[in-house]
Amino acid sequence: MILLSQQGNGPGSFPFHSMTIQDQIDIIKFKLDEAETLYQHAMARGDWEACTEYKGQVAKHRNQVGKLIRQKLKIA
Image (cartoon, rainbow, N blue to C red; front, top):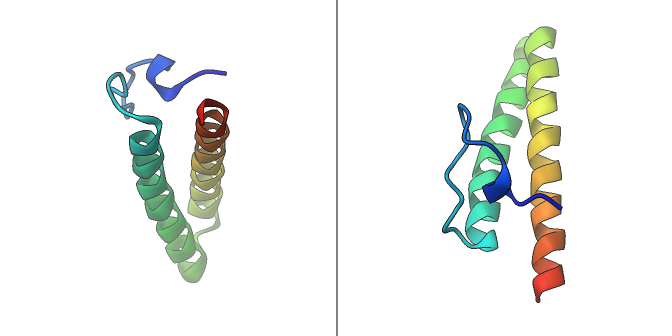
């Protein structure tokens, strides 16, 4: 399993080196909330291309949270 701290430091990535798993979860949940809001707004205005993009971001962030929670449960 790859920790977020082991992922690259490319654009948009955070330096997760000294963060706890809970800190990482909190950051990703914040990003998830933003992506869900953008997705809902795009749906409301009928911008289907933006919906596709934001739906992908929502799925990505949900997967990241799930992986971190599973990792946290392994440690506990």
